[in-house]
Length: 251
Image (cartoon, rainbow, N blue to C red; front, side):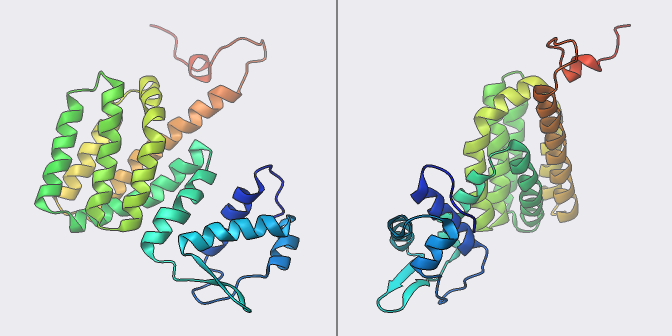
């Protein structure tokens, strides 16, 4: 834990405590540090700690046992995904960090989907790819099909953590994705989606995971390029972007 410096003290304390619990440092039934210890560690008042703790108690994550102190309750999968995971994702404010996170999570989700997907789920994935192919010149619509495809893969994984994560990422990404696809096109994403879909249909987890990894690594590389273009300014002060600077001369 780190001393709190921001203005919204209660939320900051609450988020730090959530991350502490998510780390597994305090398993079910264990006693948390006292209010005095938390005040000293976080640099906040006792009232701030109590208010943050009351939110954890209301969620059923922590119990206040009279004469003993704060005790960790059972943090099951549903509670984890609905309460703790959103805060962890919200802290990954940089798009690069979230995209790196997606590579690990969604590659595994694709592998599991290749093992567990039903015929109906495979059909839905195929239909999503076919529908997306009809809207490759409409970024607003294609972006929705794009993120829906990733959510379907997560659904087919049968893993509730992957499903909840996918739903949250979908809400975070969709608006941004429209502008991203306007700059970079949709052809490569559509190609990878078809490859992932076919691997899942073939019940081939190795290729399903590999194609998902390559797909999101391609997205990550473009995100990094966009970030560099926004931060680098040419010496002459012009508005020349990196893509323009390194463009090949016309024939």
